[in-house]
Amino acid sequence: MAKRAFDLTEDIQPAADLQTQAEGLLRKVHDTRRPVVLTQEGRGTAVLVDIHTYQSLLEELDILRDVHRGLADVEAGRVVPHDEARARLLARYE
Image 1 (cartoon, helix red, strand yellow):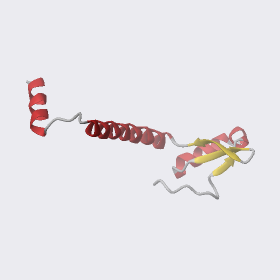
Image 2 (cartoon, rainbow, N blue to C red):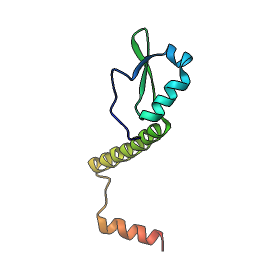
Image 3 (cartoon, rainbow, N blue to C red):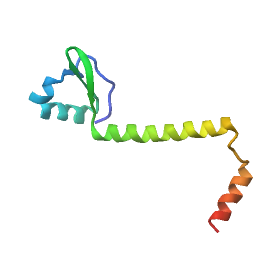
Image 4 (cartoon, rainbow, N blue to C red):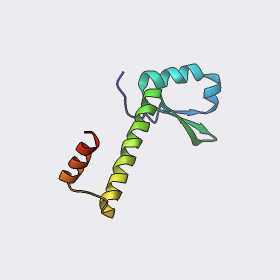
């Protein structure tokens, strides 16, 4: 099933439901691909997401960190012209 937007009316559950309805909550997260926010005393305490969404978030975070490092390198002047970078790579793999 395709991932849908977070639904405030359905996707917020008391943390106690995790103890009493774990299988149903896990099935819901898997089937809808939407996160479930678990609350304690009316405040959000944890988010339950399906494994594919979690893996996707980790991969996206890695990419964003790489982009951030690249932008920091550009800002700091740690760059080389394209021709020089190409020549270095070709020399390394000859």
